[in-house]
Length: 242
Ligand code: UDP
Ligand code: MG
Image (cartoon, rainbow, N blue to C red; front, top):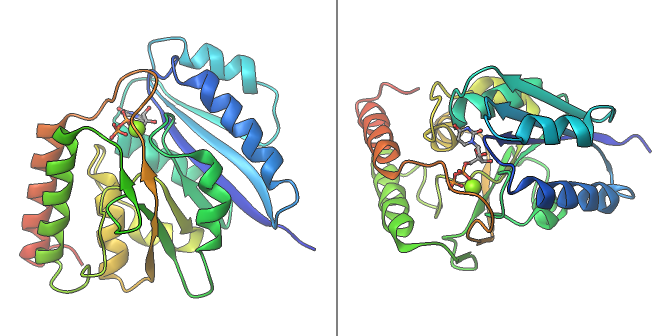
């Protein structure tokens, strides 16, 4: 049986503290996927890290055939790193996931099962009634508010959504060229989803648990990102995003 090529895309910025755990999870995932219908490739984007991230990636994966490491010479932002990874992915199916413990990599086979026929994007959703948010409250309030506002400006196209900003998703590769975001910052995840919804692609939520980062620190700047969301929503509201 011919296997479907799967790319797992992970942006990585100063993640030396998380990498040992990520390496462990990637190894485990590769073993889990051995007997699956997928042929797995890892695409890791080092977004201009200044810590031991590049050295650790080179040592672990320098000679590994199914791992692509792409380096930004300087830090360009989460969205920019994500786009680099999405463009480099050769799989027909593309999973995106953080280089930390926010999401459980062992759920990748499960989220893939939700990519049924006719579905183009599956997005992990901790705000889904069957999901769980194990994360600080200073992130809960802006994230929930952002969902409510997106629903309002999208005029019915996002009524079934509970989460707009998840970094854990599955995309069919052919959709990506059509929904590639402009944002180089943390807006990128919402932008991908908004463009998919506006273009009529089939988006499905996958209820999940969001965990706190166990190693290293979050790079998200809450205020700056909220402002990016508000500016983008204003554009959607005025019909500037098609
Ligand atoms: N990241 C990146 N470039 C940046 C900021 C973050 O590549 O400028 C990566 C980071 O290493 C992580 C992912 O993007 O794998 C999401 O960032 P983070 O986990 O810090 O954000 P949060 O999950 O807290 O929103
Ligand atoms: Mg994270």
